[in-house]
Image (spheres, rainbow, N blue to C red):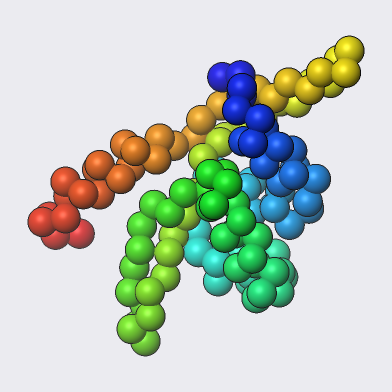
Length: 120
């Protein structure tokens, strides 16, 4: 799909210009992952990981797929990349961004809502 929303397009380009965000997006494309897992896997500092992941969620590049309670009673969000591939083209002073969706956030939310009563 061609990205027409300028804010979303700029968010994608900003993420692609940051090495840590690229690592996070690439890992979260195929894995439901947590901030802790990202910090450990890529040796990203705690505050940096939380700040970048929060920014990517706010800019709709990541979506929270699941919230789990850890053994010590804390909430842990598991997230996934919204896009599975991105193509950027610059020609005649025009930047075009084409992307393929990885997940549909509304579908995921609806599935979680309707499965609340089921045992997992």
